[in-house]
Image (tube, rainbow, N blue to C red; front, side, top):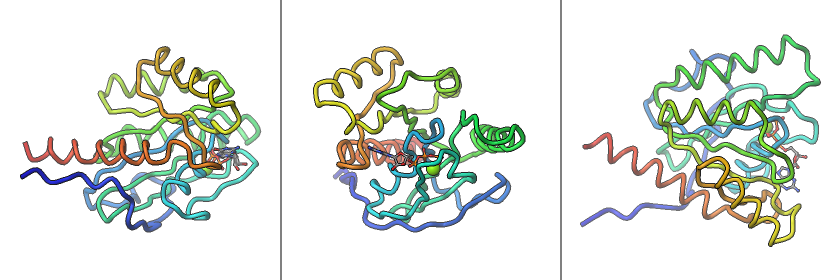
Length: 204
Ligand SMILES: Nc1nc2c(ncn2[C@@H]2O[C@H](COP(=O)(O)OP(=O)(O)OP(=O)(O)O)[C@@H](O)[C@H]2O)c(=O)[nH]1
Ligand SMILES: [Mg+2]
């Protein structure tokens, strides 16, 4: 009899903030990273998914998350909050450091099994967003897009925006709001499916 896939988050734990890829946990649990431009809502999305208001640091000022933040979910997989990219107002040196940290993590992490790319519903994807998507598709890494701050659009406009992004980028997209919780269950289910598929592939 097939085991049913759990689609709930029953436990989560903040494991640590890491400033170098050499420091990240080495216990071989799969990792799913949350990426996107600065201020798009990565940390807010994680807090909403994890059901904790202050698990990940949120701020109105872009550039809040500066390290790789690991959250262990259901003792089974990690969600990783990444620094945002494309924030112009930090020093060139800082931008370079974060860029390198994200790039090294994406290139070197052996247990990264998928990525949630966040796009703001009121902005067009940037060239960095597109580069990241191309890189993910070359690496054949499963990708989900979350269209964030969907509470800022009317219901109809939100639905149309999500459809437009799916069509343009060719990846599944989910409208999400950290304020109302819209898209939360759908995104959690999609993440659990990634983890489940991965563990099935490992067994095969
Ligand atoms: N209305 C609305 N505001 C949101 C939503 N998600 C995030 N925000 C706001 O957007 C701002 C940035 O949110 P963060 O979650 O810190 O964004 P981030 O992508 O983690 O930013 P960095 O860590 O700086 O890259 C904060 O002021 C949040 O309150 C949402 O779904 N709806
Ligand atoms: Mg953040």
